[in-house]
Image (cartoon, rainbow, N blue to C red; front, side, top):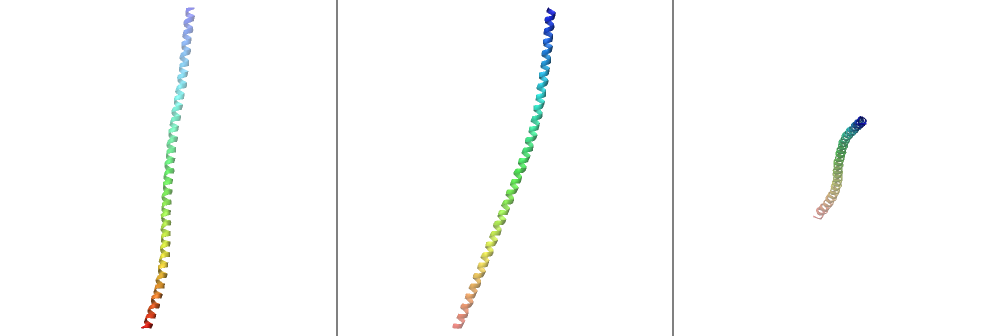
Length: 111
């Protein structure tokens, strides 16, 4: 009976060791999988960060272009205003020249 009891204890220990090995194997497998997932996630975040940086650069470029277009548009409007003012000044100068000529003509007739 003692030998039978010793054999049962021995089988129980062997069974326990086998279960421990299986559990370690499962844990190692889970650890490796988690490590793979962590690496994948790190690469994904790096990819996302790269895409965000590209998008920010694109937005910055578009904003710079927009400001450039706004400046150009402002300059064009200023040039148009300047041309209108110059035309108006030219017309006023012609009127002033005509009035001056007329007055000189009248002055020379009266003298």
